[in-house]
Image (cartoon, rainbow over all chains, first blue to last red):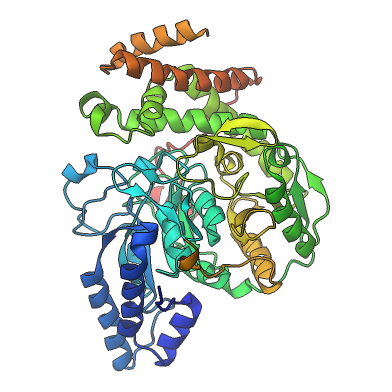
Length: 468
Length: 73
């Protein structure tokens, strides 16, 4: 299986200098997708006609002597809960096939188009984003590019797999409880869950309004930063978008971490991690000069509250279809949707009241620390179909447990960069680490991520499809 | 809640919400709800003051900026 892969930063530079045309680059991406997708099942939709028009527009702009925008000619793809004008937004379901096509692109797709990026298609996910494994019964499981017998993580599994497989250098996902960070960890790519309220969610199919975030996955820190910067901006029409201005991270990306107070999360985050996951964090901590163990406040309770809020809002959102189209739901998650819809209101209110006090305790923690490190997943990618995980001698149900370490962080709304690590003892599979910052301080997480990349501690590794 | 109590709750609340669940589905949903009940019990033991409000999203209108407030006068 020989096809070329694209390095995102190299691509935008080559197009900017005229060394490559956007149309040439797009053809490389299309060839890679066509040859490899049967192995990973990342793409559920292809928008090659649109992509050819977008790439041609970039080349025409260059031919006219105009300055190209930052991502000109970069091929990318989106989780299939992002609206793409003229296409039905599936959100991993078959029920949504009866919806009309989207009238316009999601806001983040519009912003990437403005930045010159070229949309090549949409990506596999857990139905309605309720899952951490992308074992989608309707469209088939998304397979981990590093070992096709293993999951890619979820719910943005297609996004992680497409980047890891070299199909696109950049993909967009969503993260409610860990759905960007889990696939980034298990597929070995860079990922960003921004601060809650940083990026507009308008034009995407929701899972849990109180918790949904959008963000990028990429083949390098620089690519991740460029894409994130291009997508920033306020949006008065998204009630969950709190950002009022762009705070670009790319200019300070290589500022290093001197003077930053960096700790390692212990307790809950250590107790629920395998030795390999802890080793990944230890490698990063050594490179960043972090030695102190830090206790995150009420992590187990935050996970419980996040679970309750997610199940309740998610289940209620689909209540009408649960009444009338029950048999069409994903069998792996439909019972959880129903159970969520049935939850007593008191549970939900308690969880939301807890969240407000929890936020104060988490923000207080960042008076003493600038960055905190933790594993992104307790384990490397399990086999597809795994029902139970052994975490330090305790049997835990696989599908919810994969997100055990991400949920408490997103419930607080803190930004997290995921760095791909490759610890010993995993059979060559990656485990990512979370680089966690205070709300609105993505810049600090990016600086640490860039240092880990430069030091050779973290990074994306090429896929050997012959192995799978 | 006991397993029987969870199952009874599932049956009753499903009726209240207009959900038609066969017996097998009632049982499988009850397994999930029982797991959530355990989480809710942990969370319910956390002490909150009466003034601890829920986390917010709703906002009636963005707070007026200084210039907007001046225009209102």
